Amino acid sequence: MKRPVNTLSRWLLPLFLLLLAACHPSDGKKPGIATREVVDMAGRRMTVPAIIERAYSTRPGSVTLYAIAPDLMVNRSLWMTDGAERFMSPAYLKLPFSDGSAEEIVRLHPDVIISYFSINRQSIDQADRLSQRTGVPVFMVDMEMKRYPEAFAAMGELLGRQEQAARMSAYLEKWLLPVFAKAGQIPQSQKKRVYYAEGNRGLNTDPSGSFHSQIIDLVGATNVAQVGLLSGKGMSGVSMEQVLQWNPDVVIVWTGMGPSMTTLRNITADSLWQRVPAVREGRIHQIPYLPFGWFDRPPGTNRILGALWLARLLYPEVCHIDLEAATKEYFTIFFHRDLTDAELREVLHPFTSGDAAQGQSTQSKP
Image (cartoon, rainbow, N blue to C red):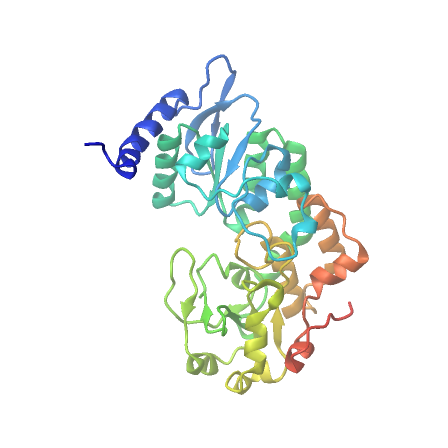
């Protein structure tokens, strides 16, 4: 009796992966290719090719790898906001979308896998397993925003892009690090209280301590959400009664719905949400989202702009940020794209709170 095809496939797949791993030694060495030893941000040592020509990025590292070395990328691991394609290079848009399966990685033949995520025992174990399954060294990069200078330097050394990494770090020193310094000087009594509205109705959020809402803490504000922290994708559920009790000074709205801005529309059209003073009085703001959400999802280097945007929004008298200049410079350095004045207005002003209250989709003037 013939073995069913699907059963045979399941039996052959592990053998196929073992054979591929044998062809690609897990120490990163390839016959006849010069190698070198590197140390990632988790302190793990590994051997990689002396010159890396193909780099694979796990989520949410696509944004950061695109900034450092877009020509070395072999995959995309993130979906963009609708309508954002025009801000990215044609070469990037042609890359296959791959979200980390060993089979997909092996087919793309990368010299190194860059894992951009929080570094802890669990993520280190996952990186080790991924390297064993694929036969490709996994270089870990910490996603903590205050470690961005170290992350850029580490990736620059790994990929031979020290000059670009230095440009990125110089941007941090010019724009972002001063915000962090000023945030530490804001008295507790003067900190703005912020609610981060996620989900279709705005009744999901992430509390302090989550990397999804990290920017709120870093710019010197208080995250009002007092709910359990969900690992991974986050988005803890809350009730309207809790939001009313927290009574935030400002509501900021996630970018998960992209240009449709469904969450913002639902909140501003909901009579229950009108009981929240911040919403009723127009202190609700759509987070910019082109070409990726500026605040979160992905929690990558796109958050640099989000931090500048939120700091200026909350503390204009303390954080004297020329957001137009900062945005233009960011796009040039991190997205390799010079914005026109019209594009600058588009990315900075997706929707004003006044327009939201009227249920109209019009752009504000800068």
